[in-house]
Length: 73
Image 1 (cartoon, rainbow, N blue to C red):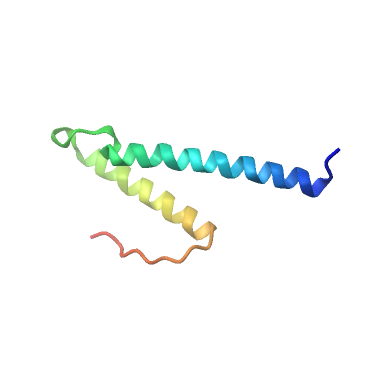
Image 2: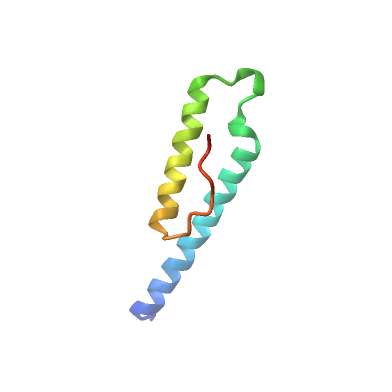
């Protein structure tokens, strides 16, 4: 039987795998320009992209990662 520390390690490793999978899905989605064709881009898409950036920056802050990116214009 596993002790509490071993169970925590297994859970942590599982969560890291899930996070890696989510990051890969996001990378593919953004590499495909959020699945929006250039001729279909509207201001709503711009707002959505800005909102995603805000959420990603919030995740970086939560993880206490350095902020070395310049703010977009």
